[in-house]
Image 1 (cartoon, helix red, strand yellow):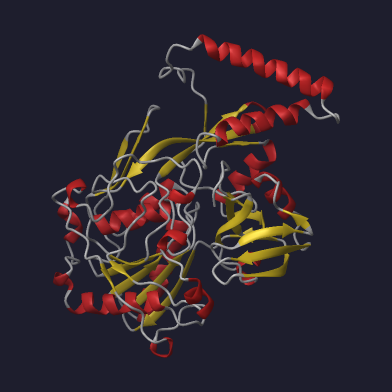
Image 2 (cartoon, rainbow, N blue to C red):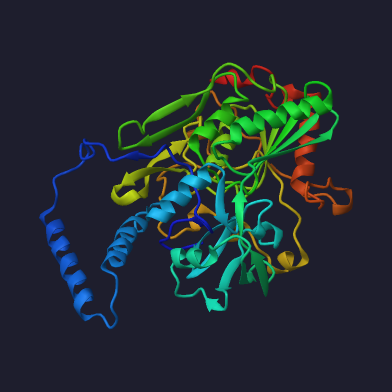
Length: 466
C-alpha cells in the first residue's frame, strides 16, 4: 500500500471530501511571490514535451503526456490527491451517488503492486473472497509490476457481465491463488441491519454516500418495529468502511449526539477552517452504543468513530483504524475534468488529528487468526494503514489517543484494554455466518453498559460533556 499513487476503487473511490466547486476568482489569495526558478522549470517542461514529440521512439499523444504530468504533479503531494480525466470525474460523481461500475474493491499501490484496501460487501470482489491486505499481482495474464495504479484500474474496469482473472498473493497466508470475477454495476447499499436479540440492534455501515444517513434512519426504524419497541442498545459496525462523504459522516454522528463537537477541519482555503457541532436529538435517546472498527475503517468512518468516542457517547471495540485524517476537495477543471486535492486535516472533538495515527479503540479485540496467520506472526505494523503509504501527510505532533496531554480536559479518557478472543465455538456468529470475535465482544460490552451504563459514562446526557 505504498507508492505515490492515489487510492482508488476499481472504478474510482471517494474518500472524505467536500462538495465539488470551480476554482474561485480569488484562488490565488494565499499565493506567495513566485520564485523565478518556477518559470525556468516551466521552460524545461516545454523543452521536454517537444523532445518527446519529435524524438521518442514511438509516436505518443501529447495530450496524454500532459495529463500524466499533471497527475504526477498532484500524486507527488500525497497519496490522495490526483487528476481526474473526464471519464474518471464522471465515475467519481456516480459512485458518491451510490452506484458505479467495476469489481467493488478499493485498492492502492504497494511496492509496485496493487494492494487491496477493502472489498465492498455484496460485490464481485467480496464474493470472490478478496481481503484487505491482498496483493493483486496479475490481471488477465499481465503482470501488475510496472503498471501505474490507474493502468491497473483501467484494466480491471469493463462492461458488466464480462469476466476478469486476477492472481492474488495473500501475504498473511504466504500463498498465491487465482480468482475469476464477473464485472458488475456496483450499487452500494450503505447500511445493513439485524436484530441480534431482544432490545439489541446491529447496524452495518459499509460506506458514506448520499444515501447513508437516510438509509441508516430507515434501518433503525425497522429494527425498532421488529423489536416491537425502542432498542435498549445498538452496535454500529464500521469495520472495512473506507469512508466517503464528510457531510454524511457528520449527519450520522449528529444522529446520536445531543450536543458537542463532531469534527473540525483546518486548511488554507476559505471555508476549510470549520467546526461542526451536534444538534439536539439523539435517535437512541442516550441508550448505550458500541462501535466496531478495524484497520479497514478509514476517513469518514473514523470521523464517526472519533466523534462518538470523544463525546463518550459510545465505547469503541476492535483494532486501530486506518488513519486517514485528510479532507479532499474536488475542483472542477476545464474540459469536464477535475482534480482531487488534499485541502485540510480533520480533528476529533478532543482536538487530535488521527492522520497517520488512527482511532485507537477503547477495548482492543482482535479477530480470530487462521493457522497460517498465526504462523506468519504478523503484528499491528503489518496491517494496512495510512502511515504505511509512501508520501503520506504527517500530522506532526498529533498525539496518540493514549497521550492524555494532547486531549482536552473535558473529554474522558479511553478505557483502552486488550481482551483475548474466546473459543470460536462459543463466539457469536456474524452476518456472514462465521464466528466474529469482535462482534461478540462488542455485544458483551453493550450488555454490560445496558446493565450499568454509568460505569462507562455512557448514559443519556453523556454527550453533553462539551
